[in-house]
Amino acid sequence: MPIRPPVIRIAPGFAPAVAAGLLCLLPAAWAEPSPALDRISISAGAFQADPRFNASLAGDANRVDTGDIKPGKVTMPRVTADVLIGDSHGLSFDYYRFRRGYDAQAGSGNLSADARMDLGLDFAKLGYKWWLGSGNTVLGLGAGAAYYRIDINGRAAIGAGGIASSYRGSGTEDAFAPMLEVGVRHAINPDLRLFADASGVWKDGGKLHGSIYNAALGVEWFPVKNLGVVLSYGLTDIDLTREGSADARLKVRLQGPSAFVKLRF
Image (cartoon, rainbow, N blue to C red; front, side, top):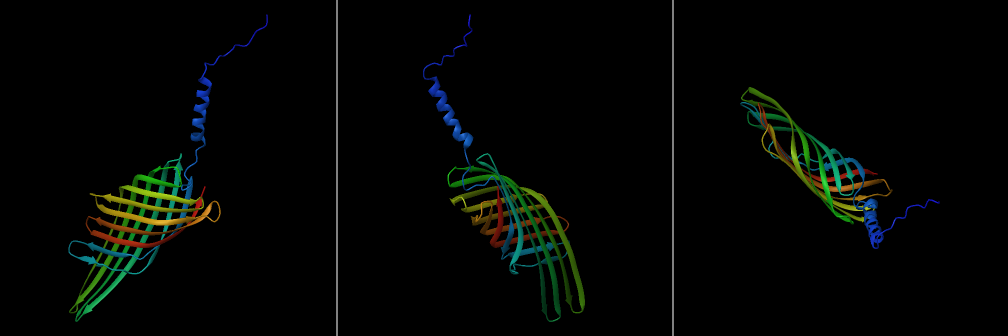
């Protein structure tokens, strides 16, 4: 007696429902991120700023203070990286460093003073962004952590009526602080894009505390598929205080253009 294969009967209307469900899943499986975003990108370049700063270093009985000065343009190396996880979750990294020295001389009658202040700031941040939207324009809301380190070394020599005195001090400290950020990306086409970013770091308490705010507007252009250039204009406002045996304060306002070479994958 021949063996017949089992017959599977599908209820009327079930097959169209399964087909519709599969069609709904296909866009999710094949979904591409917004053309304003890259899966992976690395940028390296420089930030040319015209800084204004005020630094002070105080010990038990002496103090070195630069006052508010504008020493001229300074170029700082800067590195950024972005990774997109899925289609709407991203990680971003940013690092730059600021170094500047300042000499001052003053004299009146039999009073003379010479001072030197060397300043340093290292700043790095790692953040998570949730990108809203899937078209040519997306909005990113993020949070993360920032690391910063300041180095201040100062010395002063004062002479009055043949009597000389001097003061030398230094302050170095680093800290981690929470960070919030927001970003907007718009793709004019896949190889020409606009962006705007803002972030804020604030920490209260501890030996090193204060705030760091960043904002930037820029454009990305890719003359070849995976290699492009980034031009932006940014503003960074830094106000940090170190408390300890030698109190120090660093206030810096950096404003100017940045240029990067960007690789995307």
